[in-house]
Length: 406
Image 1 (cartoon, rainbow, N blue to C red):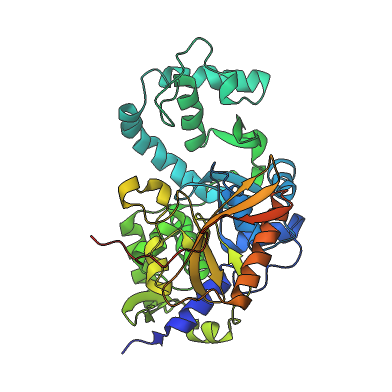
Image 2 (image 1 turned 135 degrees about the horizontal axis):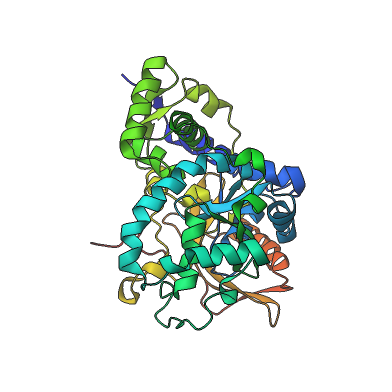
């Protein structure tokens, strides 16, 4: 019989590994901020700015002394971080850049076929031109290139050839993101951005071992699919081979994880996982808003299994089937996801407006919980340069279906 990690213990360990168990206090600049990002693995970058951008929300939810300027300094001045892809665009500790070289090689091969069907022709002819321009004249943005090229009108992916070329050169490692002007990427040669010690690739076996062990340690426990998805850097057969060898060496064990409704799932973990879960701190009962792109929620299936919280970003759900608002934020209390909230910062009149809050089934918004929610919203208002929270008429909604029918 396999060891069993009960659901309360699994939640406690999972939240602790994601820095969501302790109170969101402490320093959030310099090395302390770099250490936090290393602990949670990565910080996803996203353009939506309903309350704040995803990377700022992720960090503020863990350290409420955090200011966006501190992240910019680590990225653009100290070069302690770099920006590239995990499952999506993310900010990562710079010492991981060496492992990304294997991904650059794979992306070069994979994108050759995919991008020819996704983008208009002509971008490959711009590679050398853009590289020479950056070499001779310095960093560029997409606004600086593509003179005379037809600008797309078809949405996010209807790029002009030079913009596609910039993204290609970044995705394949020849360029790096030197910084951002607002949210616009600034591209430069990789050797000018990434410190020399992090530009040499280890062998694939070393990268495979790093990717699997670090993902397992950051998650606490994982099956093969979850392990691969964490960094999105390995092939399925590479993960399976590592798991088989690690089991034989005694580095990991098989374990059963109890889900929110009593179901069980076989996973892998370190041999001391039961002790680690027992020693993990009880999560604070303080409420906190989470970004839809928080690392703890990246795997929607795991969120549903562990917390009984069915969550899909409503922006991607067609209107007739949409249960909640356009873009809603999960609300964490202790080890429970107690609901989701639809709110937005209006910086022109300095108000954070709450349109709706949907509690999860069995959750009551009593006086004490309502006070904690209002306190958390006030902290977010201050973080986004708003001076008040406004609750719109009818903001407290009835609990909806946890999972839509069909």
